[in-house]
Length: 282
Image (tube, rainbow, N blue to C red):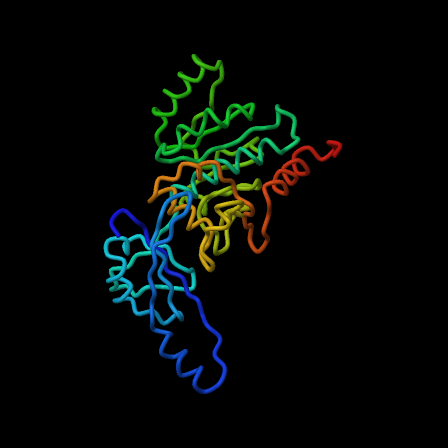
């Protein structure tokens, strides 16, 4: 299975009657494997009969692909296993960026109020700033790599006649209607009253309105080929990061979570309007 990624899902079967239950117990530890072809690339689908997985068998079936195994969230391989869970880090970051732009575009705030802060300590998202500037009046950047962003600011002034505000002050969020912090750390340490969008998870209590846990809603062919029991973002991320499907770069989040609430980009945009321009007619 060289060149393919692998997916492990759980498919429980109903068991009625004594013989059916005995047969079911025999099948519980069984794992089937098949190659699945999709319009976005091929992968190996492993199906287990229960959460009690024979991880040694999974490792034997997957080979090197087991180090980045897409699997049901109910499964957790043992620490001493060679199996590692695939995390769609690159795609999640891209989906967050797309979603931020969608929120800003959907917002009916006047341009002079569209002030956004990007928290990017290690200057990993420099290429995101020009995209933000097309939709905002001002982009503030909080970073430890001030010189890197100062060079970008000079370039943007020459090319677009626009500039950015660069600072290393982690408390510099005044005037912003939205903070974007792609990385979970330091998102969980930000203190502000405006929403903070992050690509990470948001379990726990925070000092800000942290919005994360992005989920996509696949459509068309992607919806048809996403394996049952697999998070669509995990599967799309594998197609993107392991199989090179570039179409995933256009995906946006269907919902994001703030505490226990699931929010759509449209609802977040409406919140920005109501919080920062309450007298604006709907």
